[in-house]
Length: 137
Image (cartoon, rainbow, N blue to C red):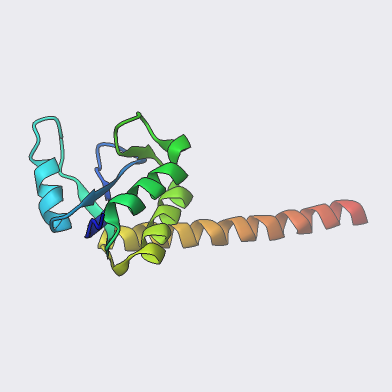
């Protein structure tokens, strides 16, 4: 059964570290508006990224399975992610879909991820310098 549509990742500024990974057969922005208009949502959702594909529903399930340990509640499409996990989820969508689209929020998360990696690499270099100084003393 073909299920053409979009796989998306959404965030909400009032749900820090929580992301929704879903699938829709409509435009992702339309889905965001539906979710954001709910009375149970204190603030609108924002699109992080989305991809277009023929097997959207089955690929969405595969991504859910990959992140099952981060899933907040069975039967719900919300996941608790750190920066590395949300970027990994975005990469999975990018690598398994056509017409991958990102937003300003994705760009900001990617920049944070790059800065974090650079900081970790510099920290490791500095630790090695400290360790070699201690051995020389």
